[in-house]
Length: 518
Image (cartoon, rainbow, N blue to C red; front, side, top):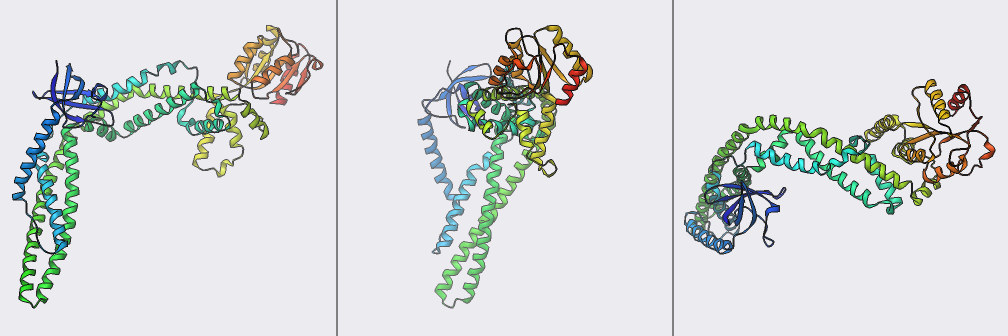
């Protein structure tokens, strides 16, 4: 069943509004429920809609609203014409005075039209629970859409990474714009959205008054109306004050002219003009007093309304916000990690980026840590500004998060286990990863930073030379290499063998060689 009503409140920023029926029942609606493509929602608009619980949907402009608005406009015109009889007018030959009079008449009329509205009592449109439910429900929906990011196997502190992550993104895409895949574009855009969402959320948590104003007060129809009209009164008072000062100067000037004028007729005219000025001046003073009284009353009403709900809102908002802080941070950090990962993964396959670093003689593992390390190596930390100090802090964080590994690849699982045991027994702070599968080692190396490779000359499915050729074709880094076996079996091309050890090398010899390269 169609119901008729009027839009009592509408917020253009979030698309939420309230309609009121003839029976004074208030129903909420959203821009998604708006069903009229010719006219946008606006306060005072007559509408027709369907009802479901406390919600209105299929909302559209009432078909007779245009005719009705014409009738209202006509009635207002007659009312205004009638009210003009009570509005003082200013008539004199002096053009400057005529201008002041015209401005004053318009101002008095405009003010008198709104005085009754300003005296309206401020009542609650939506209680604290309703406004908080609306805000957190929208936040919950956005986070629910992105719960899949929680499954990402890694996190990158976005608060630390933000500046350099986007610098890296811009630098790499400037070198090769073709590396921006649909996935990179999608993740980067969504990261920006969630970042803004979190910034907005964090500001509300940090500044409860901001949350109170944005979430609660902005949803109060009558409060918003009184607030706006109080602002308009302040503007009118400033205008009236300026006119009062101008008229005071004009009166003094006119008095001097009267004193100096000898001609009786001219003097008579000047006295008449002074009386008009005095009348206008009195009207201004009267209107200022009236507006100041209304302003005082409504300012008090605003403060009382705010004081009634402020502390209760603060407590409930802070308690509710705690439920979302961890989740939104985790999603953002997971997105940052994912963007960083897929960005460098794509960069490692980009010929343009390989050539760019090669021309600059930059020989680094392609990841954020080594790229940042290269950038910071050109700076003096002691002379760095705050922004650069933040980058050094971010680098320390990356060192903790992204470990440098020693990769061991042998044809025999027992040898791999022995070498791992030798190294970790000598230094527990070294990170070791061992394999007998060439393919699995390559997959792992693509996701981690390898500083040293310990490799046998003959592997299960291939040779050390073939493996290293493949490694350097797919992973843009040049770790140091310790070859176990016969070096004559390896013809060095893109890489160099840093040390050669015999088969079944003893622990001490392996550790000494390793320490020399670290």
